[in-house]
Amino acid sequence: MRLLDNINSPSDLKKLSIEELPRLAQEIRDEIIETVSCVGGHLAPSLGVVELAIAIHYCLDAPKDKLIWDVGHQAYAHKLLTGRREKFKTLRQFGGISGFPNRNESPYDTFTTGHGSTSISTALGLACSRDLRNEYCKVVAVIGDASLGGGMAFEALNHAGHIKKSLIVILNDNEMSISRSVGALSRYLNRIITAPIYNRIRKDVENLLKRVPRFGFRVIRAARRLEEGLKNLLVPGILFEELGFRYFGPIDGHDIGAIISTLQNILKLDEPVFLHVVTKKGKGYLHAESLPEKFHGVGSFDISTGTKKCIIPEGSTQSEMTFTKAFSEKIVELARTNERIVAITAAMPEGTGLDRFAKEFPERFFDVGMAEGHAVGFSAGLAQGGLIPVVCIYSTFLQRSYDQIIHDVSLQNLHVVLMLDRSGLVGEDGPTHHGIFDIAYLRSLPNLAIMAPRDEIELKEMIGFAISYDGPIAIRYPRGGSFYSNRLELERFPRQEIRFGCGEVLKEGRDLAIFALGYMVYPCLEAGLILREEGIDCAIINARFARPLDRELILEISKRVGMVFTAEEGILEGGFGSSILELFEKENVKTPVKRIGLDSRFFEHGMREFLLDRYGLSSKKIADFIKEIYIYAKNKD
Image (cartoon, rainbow, N blue to C red; front, side, top):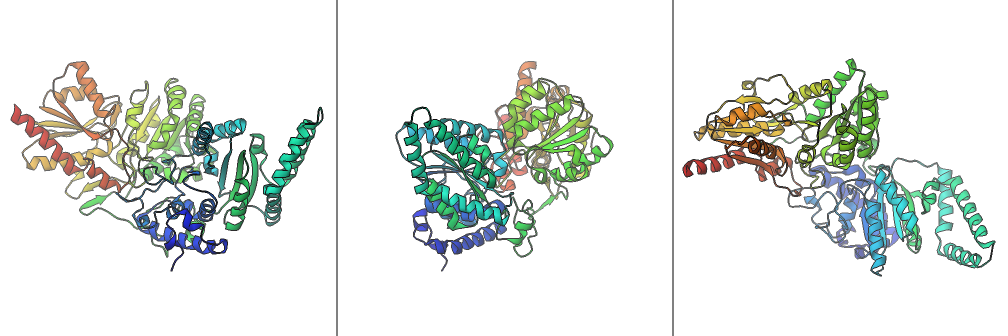
């Protein structure tokens, strides 16, 4: 019988001996690999922190003690140790457990997380709240080396070190390697400086020296400099010491015994502590160890070969080209003939498709790390300097750079091209990753144009247009590729040249008009076929631009039909449909408008196609909605 089968909470974990924990770690790895191979997920990050998760829960008294995983995509072992073992195979499935910590799912998940660099700030807030309420608990933040590069993390470190709250920050470093000699020396030194007797004597001596007039504080400072000097001959902790933390490490993140003994000692300290742990991303699965970026976030795969499984909805065709791949191909093609084009990403070269650009034009590629605000501000400087920066960031992460988009790009009216990958419902990653707010949060900004392609071919055309455009412009596009049912004859809809602020009429109709934006174009075309069988003749318009609107086209068509519908894969409040309502109000147009889109709320995780259908954005659901509204209005008249 597996040890894991008896672990229903951290209290069960504590019943095991330290000698049994490596076996438990292997069982957890096997469970993670087997589950993720079926349902997809963040494999390599979670495999890398199995021993660390075990050690933390072995030492803490959670949920009384507070644990925050930065980003949270590495928390699968944490879930298995905190009562979710039996549900683990539902990972990232609709109605199942989340792929990230979720405070609505478990008391062991202190925060719902999904974005980077936030854990130290929220942990410090918890520590201050604890002290103001005269409570007692330990607060631990686990942050990765990529997240630590974000400005928010350093702001929090600076504040925490200044106010000296009892707080433990654990750095999960999966990129740094340590030579055997340095690693051995650092382990020996850390055993000394984390030992209770050392820290008790250290504090007693300091208290005694403080009573010595004139010379006491000088001696204390000299002793601390000596300690820091010795440590920094061996370990890279000077930055964190200068920020006000006691630094310990680096230690082997796969040596459970070493992590536990270190944690047990530093948990007794009443000050800001920084523990540096070195891990291997993808640990325990050869394919993930050798290709950690490929296995960072994966779909279902074959365990023996590591190859991807492809699932296409029945009765549908998926484009061989994904939107991300189309972007990757087009930007490289354009960069070959235009040396002004430079590309920027925030720690996502593979996810955004910019890895190909980076290989071909390394001197014109900039990965700024997990620092989206800096990425946009940096791009403004590049544009002002005469280059054409193309900034590719997932929609949900671009939210982190909102002030820079306003202040550094739009206000200056600079030619920065913002590529918003993963716009709309992204699927299994859930509410922290759905890119459903971008139209609403960008549409009100002066000077900024917003485009959305119906498919990968149109995305390539829009990229070419955006490069030639002189001003700030954003292009939003979804995860994966375009889907359409086999009944839709795409060749019936010839493509028109892209012109600024202009849509295109794909089908004329006398009864009603549907203005569709981006990915919603094909579902609306299919809905039009369904409605035609019901005797309802629909005009279908590919809006192309969410801002500016094709004012003349919209007003002209609205005079010829009895009702207007809008369709968008984003929230309705402040979205594309709202802009048409605003136009009609301004122009005193009486044609009724009904909007199709998403309510302003946080949507759960689940397969993308399933969520689109569940929330009314599949062709059938669109047709049903339009039919109900149109027939009701017709009968009422």
